[in-house]
Image (tube, rainbow, N blue to C red; front, side, top):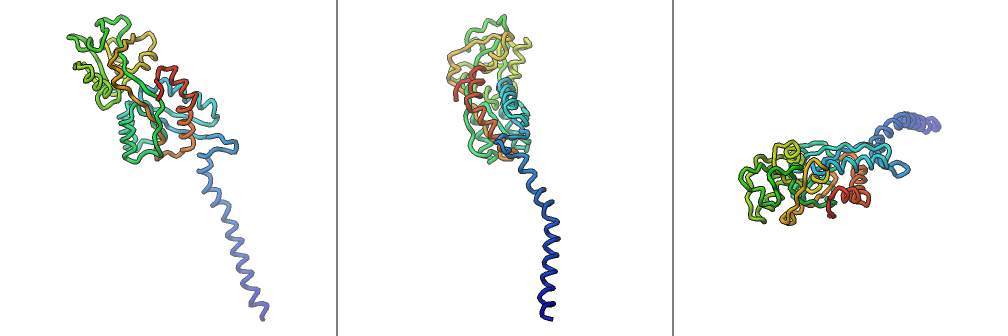
Amino acid sequence: MSTLKHGTPVIITAALMLGLAACAPATTSTATQPAASHSPDAAGQVSGTIMVFAAASLKATFTQLASDFEAKNPGTKIVLSFAGSSDLVTQITQGAPADVVASADTKNMTKLAEAKLLDGTAKNFATNVLEIAVPPSNPASIASFADLAKPGVKVVVCASQVPCGAAADTVEKAAGVTLSPVSEESSVTDVLGKVTSGEADAGLVYVTDVKGAGGKVKGIPFDESGKAVNTYPIATVGSSRNKELAAAFIAMVTGADGQKTLRAAGFGAP
């Protein structure tokens, strides 16, 4: 009788353990699968896809940087979305699925930081200044910033909430010149488009935009541009689902390879 009483619990316990063991592998596999897809693999390589929101003035350079990054990191995909920095902030604030954001000024990035929408601290990676863009023939004979205020000159600028527009406002005050633009655009690329299409006699864009446009426009530097130097910061968005890849891309932008590409495009050091 004694043997039966002590043996029975052992048999029941063993059966329960076998039942639990049969369920365990499926639970473990399901829990670990998502993490594995967003982590560096055994060789230390990142993988997956990220969405990078970048200021319109970064289109050419970030397209190149994304291509270079993908070539050096097989299995990665960098999806790019370009717009005016203020528009990018609005989109992210409203829940757009961005992993990385690069702004053309610190003011808009600060808005995201204050809203606690960033992961960590933004890093400055470039600077830029304004330049006057005119058609190659320069029909309005623009030679200085003051010439933009001459009667009959069709000048186009960025809207004030956009970094290139804020810079234009600063330059106007510094130069003591008041412009009467025929239109205010939401991005610097839109301003450049007005000039290249012949809809404007001149536009205030960045030196990098003039350089990137090649022979489509003529650039006219002006001394007052030094009064409004725009600093470009980059950061990981807090809601990113692949922060390892986001950090790796940011490291490239701020590192030697990224800086070389940015300098070649005309951007200044941060």
